[in-house]
Image (cartoon, rainbow, N blue to C red; front, side):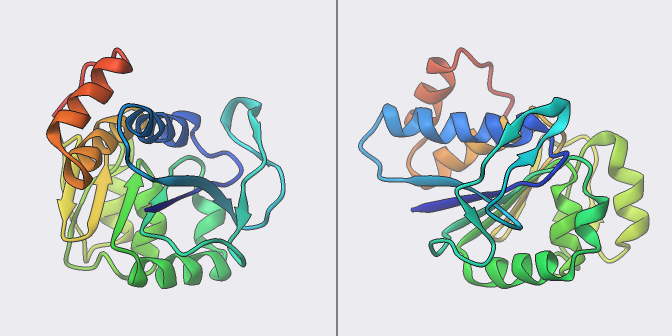
Length: 190
């Protein structure tokens, strides 16, 4: 399975590093063959929040086919105005088996129109903005993650870890998800 994590300048670090750790820990504890990689608009250094610099594995113009597209949050407003990025997210979302968002990553997926009429969540601080900006969504509050068909969204930052553990349980088994949480010394909020 190919898991592509889309990130950008000022992305929230735990939004991508937490899920990345969950999936990699699950790989170490089992015999699953997952390929996890970072994708950005271009294959060039990005600077996430706090000044963390990261070189993505791929740009949006050239990457392996995706089974799971993972879209992280952060300072996302510039991304909403990039037609090439939103078009790419829409194209990938229509062909992948699953699409997951963490925090304000939900705004990027919502911009494609694919979430219209679906249930979704985001960081508690952005619930009103998501509701106002995208009135066709059923924005849910007080949820760590929300699953609606192949679209799965999580609340802010650390909730992406909880959602990723849920994905491990869904893709492989509850037992592996429990082992992964235990190995990470993480108390999983289900």
